[in-house]
Image 1 (cartoon, rainbow, N blue to C red):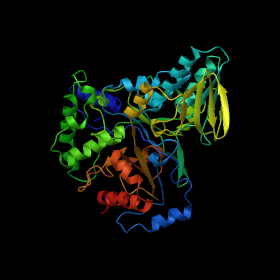
Image 2: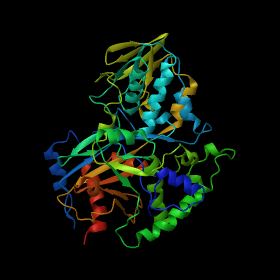
Image 3: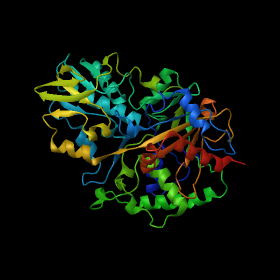
Image 4: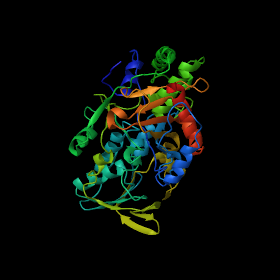
Length: 462
């Protein structure tokens, strides 16, 4: 079923009473996992795979955002609290001369364009409080930090970006798979109509490929299990009244059918864990109503995502390998980073919610209770990727993606993106979210690849 709406638009439509079919994952994030792995190590893992009816891969990359100390998550999610979505606005409230910005504070959370807009909003807010030429320290050179810096430059201020790594982009990151570039971080533009990323892609000469979230099950009979489960799932979501007393504290799990079966278990992994990076008992039911979502459909890029964001900072100063560990606000701001200090008139902190929750950065004076409540109340979601490269496709090259129901654990290795239509390369990308992603983060490469290849063998081995 073709749609010209983003996935969350489709969810909203379903909650209003429309049937929902043919949806897929929203956004994936990754780290630099595997980039420092030698070709000898790669070959050893591939050689140790058990014999199967399908060809072995020639290369692989896996992400592990929860193990990346500069992220500790993929993106935020709304957990059940009495504050509801107000937690995001609470986190965005300035604390003295310190502000917070990022996808966790965005009107459209868990997206690149949400982070971009949050950074620009923070930049305008800070500029409204300071004199022309004031110095502003920005912690983190991800999309929010870059966008904030660019806005401050346009407003006549003097930003300096302090980045812990040796690159810009944060959770926009690529890696090399069999000699070709693939996205380990953000992959999609979510809602191309009115999206600033659409214009940036056009300016960068990067093409967009519509992604329609078709359900395409290679194993006969599996789609017939999912279609009624999708209807039941969205009927349950429709039953939620966000204005009812206590609605903010309800979990999504409390709305879902108790009797589930393989089709429903797969649907929950697909619609929840791979959408929000959390499981239904962790996620607020209100999360299904968050955000002012853009239309026009979603799209994958045929060029590097990083090329869209390279110019956001408008030439602002960037200091790499500056891991901030302390921020002091006593009338002016002093930022401590790796033994150095930067004095500024204000600071904007754009690190991921996972880093804020871990307390990696010390604040003096201590952050007020309201800000700490926002940090504690927002969840740190996880969505990881496994990229596999083959000599040639053994699957149908036409579908944008395909799905599978593991009879023993529905949802495990259940979603695969086919890279052939976009890149022309015989690559596949598997998505895993929530607790299953955390489980996989704890296993070695051989175990992870064996599980993934077993799933592909069950789908395509003849």
